[in-house]
Figure 1: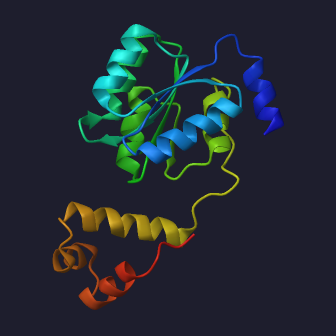
Figure 2: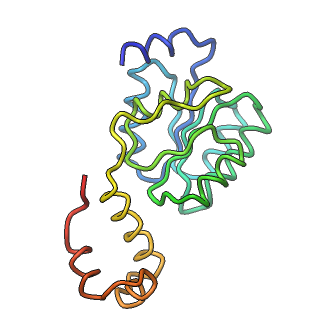
Length: 185
C-alpha cells in the first residue's frame, strides 16, 4: 500500500468520484481510497453523480455499472465531456465480456468485478495511460466467476429456478443445490 500511497501523493490532483448504490460498499471503498491519499466524493445515484461532475469534474472516478436510476456508462460520458483526461474504472457484480467492452468503449480505463480490493482499484486508476493495470493480486476464482454468472442469470430470470436452469442448460435440482450454497471465494 505504501507504493500506492506514494504514487497518489505525487499526483497534481487526487479527486475521485465513487458512485455505487450499495451504501456499505461505497463507504468502505471511499474510506480505503481516502487512506491511500485520494480526495473522495461519494454518491449513490446517477443523478447525484451527474450533479457532482457538473459542480467539479474529478480527475478519477470509480463507477458501478448497474444502478437503480440508470447506468454508470452515462456518467463516464459526462465525465469525459467535462474532463477528457479523467481516468474511470467501472465496477460491477455482473461481469461479462459485452459490458466490459461497452465500458472501455465509453472511456473507462479498466473494468473490475465486485467486490474489488481498494488496492486493485487504485492500481487501475494509476495505471500508465498507454498501458493497463497489472493483474489483480487476488483475482476471483473460476468457481466464483461461475457462481456470479449463475446468480446474474437467476436474477435476470426473475428468480425463476426452472427458467434459469433451462437457459443455463442444467438440471433444475443441480441449480437448486448451487443456489443453496454460499458463494465460493
